[in-house]
Image (cartoon, rainbow, N blue to C red; front, side):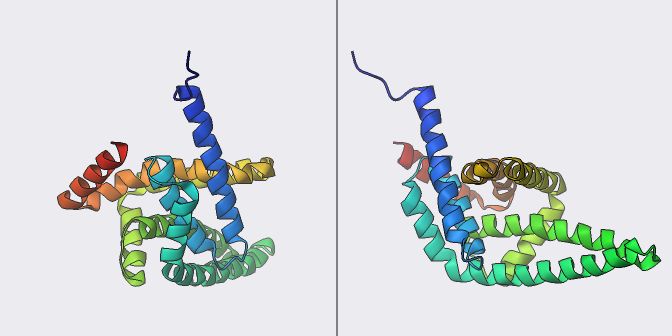
Length: 215
């Protein structure tokens, strides 16, 4: 009698191990801080290709995406860091006015909302970069439009990010599991959105590629 590894339990355990590995890779490659953009792009690519579609190996997929998108993702991340910094500083200043009960202090809420919007936009940007080729300006513009037009999906992205962040805050060790798990959810949300804007030829080519990989 053969011991069957190809069952639901072992496949689930295998996927969990994959999530731990890719989450660790994301953390490790994000440590220099300025590489967070490239690392996040690689995380999305690996989750989409290797975990959800079982195409390729975890490390090779992650390294390929990290290396291929390093320059573009890093530049975009640095631009976003500047935007985050400006919004944080403005919110900090307005919060001071708000604490002193000055009317202008209510702008604090505006900057807080803008900060959250930019945060969600950044997830669209890195997911888009992992999936499609385009210029940095076009990626920024396309993702802003897509996020606004598909607002219900954007809200789901925000909820996923907030819940994931809260779980890591409560149980820090989940930092080595939650990133990949949350990106599985993001992939389910964003791929449904992205497919609306893919040509029939691209959709057919992707389905054929998936079929060949499964075979």
